[in-house]
Image (cartoon, rainbow, N blue to C red):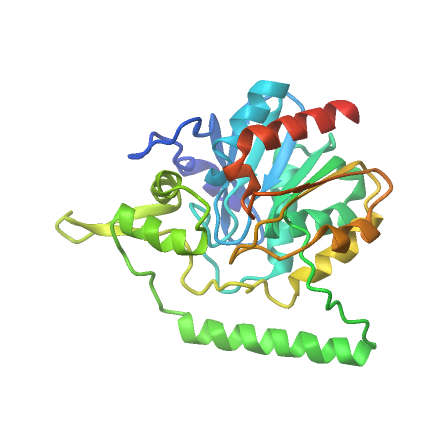
Amino acid sequence: MTAEAATEAIAPPDIGPTVRSYPGARRPDRSRWVTTSGPRIAAYEWGDPDGPTIVMAHGGFDFAGTFDVLAPMLADGGGYRVVSWDARGHGNSEHTALYSWGADMRDAAAVLDAVSPVEPVVFFGHSKGGGIMFDLAHALPHRLTHMINLDGLPSKNNWPDLADHERTKMLRSELEGWLEHRARTATAERRPDTIEGLARRRQRMNPRLPLEWLEYLVTIGGEEVVDGDGASFGWRWKLDASLRFGGFGPWRPEWSMQRLPGIGVPVLGVLGLEPETMGWGTQPADVIPNAPPVFRFEALEGVGHFVHIEQPRLIADMVLSFLADHP
């Protein structure tokens, strides 16, 4: 049996009702497995299966479920077919021995091939997902019609203009650090807690997000842990314990800004200007000098890194008007 046939024989990723709800949140209409370079990737769709397609990449330590409010707004408001997936090691997608920026890019390309092998689509990414989609736009420029980036423009004003031998040293240090971390965490497991406990722990990193939303997220990005007798002893995030912040493999996130000027399709870039632990600290002055040929740029006061969760209606209307203005 081929890998594709084996994947099709497995029940699709769970999109059933959750034990928590959140106003406006809607689980996907369809789900499927995508076979990539090793693990099975859980992919999801909202909206008309024959509508124009938006392919959305979530951020690090997140899940496709973080689009459960925004994606239905885009699907219902513009007739779009909205597609997202859980990155490897996240949510329902399989864990793997190692993680890297390149592997995440290959997974994104596999999802793209599965959902729209011929027609170009709208690329959309939040945070790390925005950087992934920037790189994919350069690798596959014929596969996209528009680029939408939500607070995925990392810049710490430290892009090194280095000679090749210095870049090689940096690459080596990144690789060695990641492999040493993997060796330390190969058998680690994430600590279980109640739904409320996991939500409160996450809120320490995302203080602007309501606890009600984070509890809902736990029931999508986590799983109930039971003992051999079927008794529950809490919930645990469905995140590989070897994943770490900034652990994108041999890559520095701020390099993504260098991709921005070379994107030839219309680009919408959105920044949340409120500082957050998981944000990049990027300012408008970091972005404007790197503007691509067709660029709408929105810097939002009073909004943090998770712009699509704090202000989903604002972001949905902004995206829909941008796509309508650049058909």
